[in-house]
Image (cartoon, rainbow, N blue to C red; front, side, top):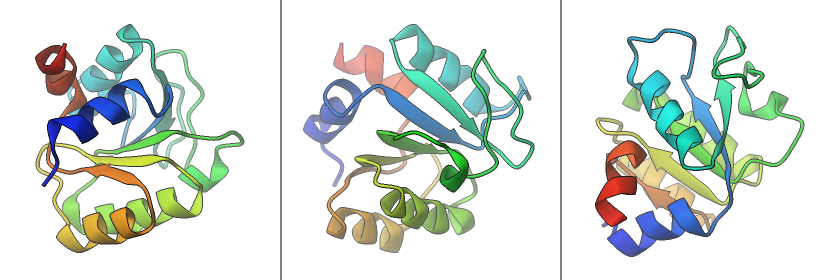
Length: 134
């Protein structure tokens, strides 16, 4: 379902401001390393986590709704059960794309997000896709 063209479009065309939902200062979590990779590739990473702590030099926010500027891509690192609500919030906030990380799967949320006009990738990791697609 998610083709390479959609992955490439999200990574290269839709904008460089990525909200990373589930990103905290916990270095052992996947979100921490993936956010570093995104930054190295020119993305502005906006941490979204209940603690709202700054991560990688960027101010954190407790929710997508709290971010006072436009976000292009919402990268979701929460459990699959919670991902649908985040996807709906991404649509409500006017994001251009949603990205569910490896292991984050919600087919209904995927379809809703696509139906709302967003590009959407599910069960993939940008830190893997960036080098793969070159």
